[in-house]
Length: 146
Image (cartoon, rainbow, N blue to C red; front, side, top):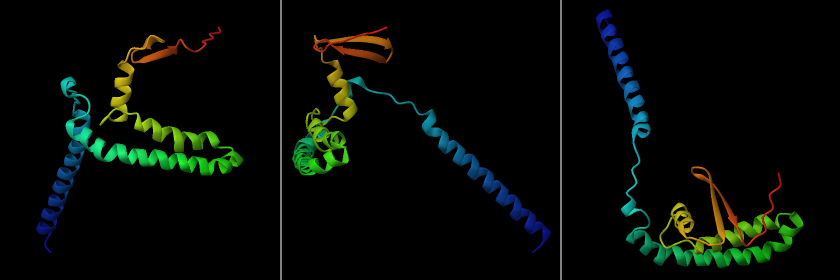
């Protein structure tokens, strides 16, 4: 191999390495440069997600909730011995039934948003620092100590 061929080969490698590096840097920057735009008219569940949730999601959720309740009842003596009855109740009983109460076709975030928009005369909302807020249920006793 001649010196000229070796030099050309080295230059080609360097150019290829440079192009590859620049391409990877540009490709990794694309998500950071992308803006997320929310269309408020099209926010929320679509027809497709509602249909799939009706046909597949809710029936499977019901089966999961019933099976979780049965598993919780069966595991209760063992979880009481192990001292984790609260965690077992939360994961096996509460969370599956809460998921059944989610709006049709909604994600958890959409459901939380819709539920936060419902006015409740027993809730006092204090905005601390956008978007942070304090919610006080006036049906409960609230004790504030300095």
